[in-house]
Amino acid sequence: MPRYEFKEGKSNKFWEIELEDDSFTTRFGRIGSDGQESTKSFDSRAEAKREYEKLIAEKVKKGYQLVSEGGGDAPPAAKTNPELEAAILANPDDVHAYEVYGDWLQANGDLRGELVAIQVALSKAHDAGLSGRANELLSNNEELFYGDIAEQVRGSVNVTWRYGFFDKVRISMGYDDADGGADIDDIVSAVLTHPSGRFLRELTVGMFDYEGENHYPRIIKVLQKAGPKPTLRRLFLGDFEYPEETEISWANVGDIGKLWALYPNLESLELQGAEIELGKISAPKLKSMILRTGGLPAGALKSLAAATFPSLESLEVWTGSDSYGGDSTITHLSPLLTGKSFPKLTHLGVVNCGYVGEAVSALAKSKILGQLKSLDLSKGTLIDDETDPLLDKGAFGALSSLKLSENLLSDAACSKLASVCGKVDCSEQRDNDDPEYRYVCVSE
Picture 1: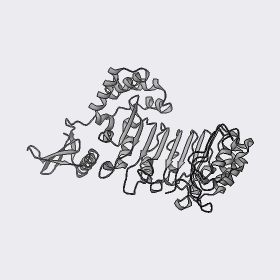
Picture 2: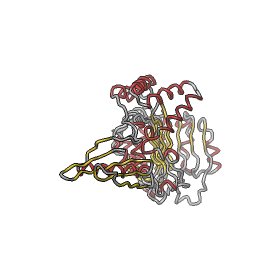
Picture 3: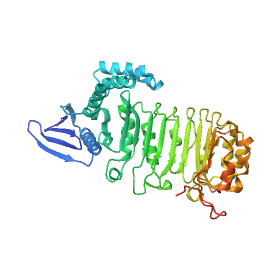
Picture 4: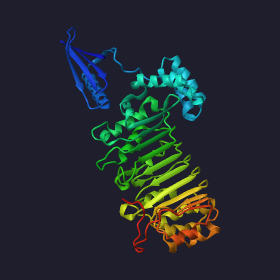
């Protein structure tokens, strides 16, 4: 139990505090006396730790000085070696760099070193004994390896380990977790700032609020505050099932513009929800982007058109309905079809689009079509009268696949389109009850 003392004039007092799971115990009184003891419990381990740290800060501010660390169960500070860590940051796939770092950690008495060695060995060959030892290390040293999310890894946080560190983390809170449980901001922050998250490669954030406030701008602020993460390769904000968990338009993504500089090696970005804004994009390593929404603001398409994506291979944009923020038109989409910004693009999705007929005409004349292997025009408002450009095999015949499902096409039109290219998906067409007022497949 850490012990603090205050000595000033005739005042000689001590104060001790010990954190244990979701509670802490304090003991205080005059130096030399047994003092008084008090225990306070909280709803979660994270809340208890926040109050624990707050109380210590208050005592230090009042002049109390730490005189003994005590014998509490807090783990030792994580060992660091900037040179060895830099080698991993430069190439997170270099197994040897992890092995060297793990050896150094073991030599310095850090249990993580043993975990590194075990998980490197398991990546090469299965060994039941080693697997059991890894599980034992993790379960017996939760504070060391999980920190403030030790409680959540049994429910709302799913961690995939790799070479002694978090590799993939998915955070999705069930209804009970979200209703009075740990704060989503604290969980995301803990994942990013804990030593185990130092070399994180994938982060997914799903549901965390079931009362209509499942909005991601707060998550984006936490990501910004956590700082650069050069190892991050995949980011997914909005991993929820619609409409089962929430409507797609009820979850706002927000502006991710300030994240590009933090994740210079990002290879995959997936955003699902409303009010998506991309800001000024710098994504030299990005290979795949999905913007899934019931209404994509025109500003997002403008951001795409203004950027260059030297590595992008797959782009899927859902333009959506103007009733839910999708205020773009073919004028905003057309600059993307020149191909100038996407030299390596082989898959394009213009999905859930209310002006897909215009997009088809523009694509037929575009420069980008020639480099595409697959094209997804599903979930839109395409009708029979807008399919003539698609029947031009000279334009679309080189595609390996063309997806036209969930539009408003007749059986006769689908039969004609079936032979346009290698594989045509014309399944699950919706009824075209009112040709004058057509709806995209996903809006609210």
